[in-house]
Amino acid sequence: MPAILGSIFAYLGIGVVSTAGLYVLVQSLVTTAQSTWSGVDAHILAYLSLAGIPEGLSLVTGAYLTSVTVQGLKAIRFLS
Image 1 (cartoon, rainbow, N blue to C red):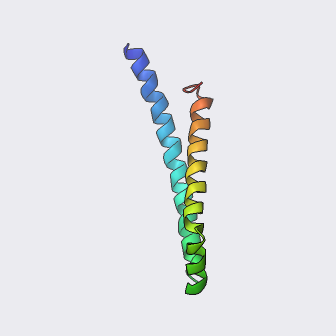
Image 2 (tube, rainbow, N blue to C red; image 1 turned 30 degrees about the vertical axis):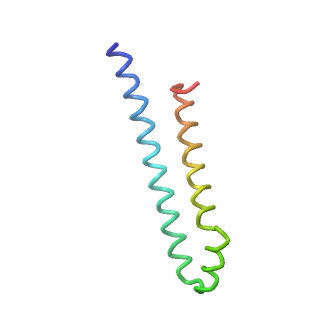
Image 3 (cartoon, rainbow, N blue to C red; image 1 turned 60 degrees about the horizontal axis):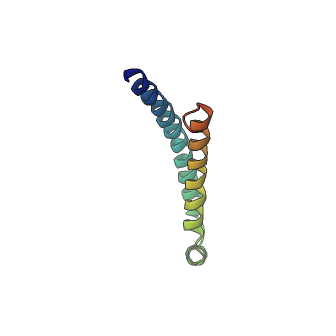
């Protein structure tokens, strides 16, 4: 039983480290995008917000992070 727990913790550790690294990368991209968008006129930002662009970007980013995490867990054969 301790061997199984050790392997589970090892798999989770690898997943957490790779996900944390990817999160830092995505957070850096979000910060860059925010600083780039700060120069855009307020009216344009209001129209983009009404169109749901911020929520759409959030969904895409979250889906990408989830996809990479699942692929990483499959690569180490944690998930079938």
